[in-house]
Image 1 (cartoon, rainbow, N blue to C red):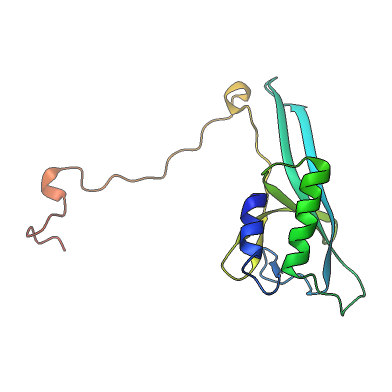
Image 2 (cartoon, one colour):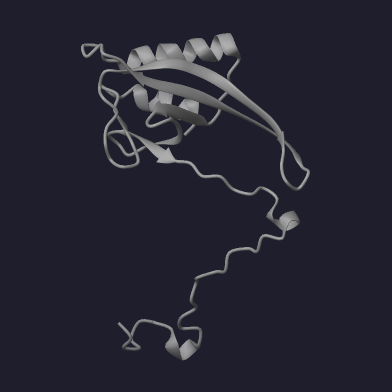
Length: 155
């Protein structure tokens, strides 16, 4: 999800709710303690130099059980960070403290913001000799006589 998308969604929300991949909710008294621009300049295992930028939201929960972050306040925080940190319409990554600091992608299901699992991947498979995954598609009904058409009795 990009910054423009979360701002658009927040315009129509009365509350903010984040759901972890295991379906548990981040406690309602969370704070967004940071909105930052993360720049990653790196070289992959195939020797290609890469540059990546994203926006980072850090969620934190305290013993302040009366605190509730309202959508309009989060929009203000986002807009301030865009202005002061020169942040464009970048993808959002969310940090949340589990057993250790966890990083998530972000999605929305119509009610809650979904913290989605992130995974590592090799960016230079063709140079590392990593085989492409085999397709699991099965072609069915390739013969014209096997095709389901109106009136042929297959349905």
